[in-house]
Length: 102
Image 1 (cartoon, rainbow, N blue to C red):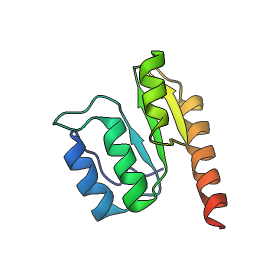
Image 2: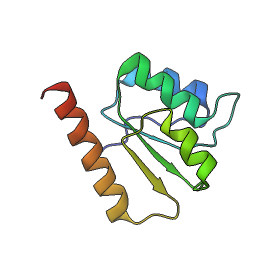
Image 3: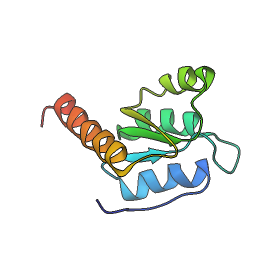
Image 4: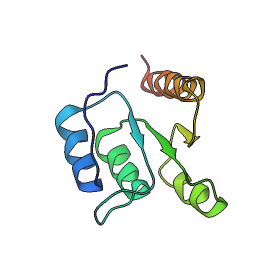
C-alpha cells in the first residue's frame, strides 16, 4: 500500500480526503483540533464514499458503539499486528468494491 496523505487534525483529514481521494482511510478516534475521528469518518463517508477503518487505542464499549455511527469497514485496536491491519484493509477494500459493483 502507498500512504497518499497524513493528517493530524480532523480538519486536515477532511481536506486531504477531498484533495487526494484515497481508496481507504485509516482513522484514529482521538485527533488534534475540534473534530474527533468518529465525526470526521462520518463526514468522509457521507461526502466522498471512502471506506474507513478505525485504527485506535480505544476499545471501550462506549467508543466502539459511537464508532458504529460512522459505519466503518473495520476497527483495529492498538497495539496491532501487521496481519490484523492487512486483513482489515483487504476486507474493507473488497467490501467497498463489491458494494459499488466493481
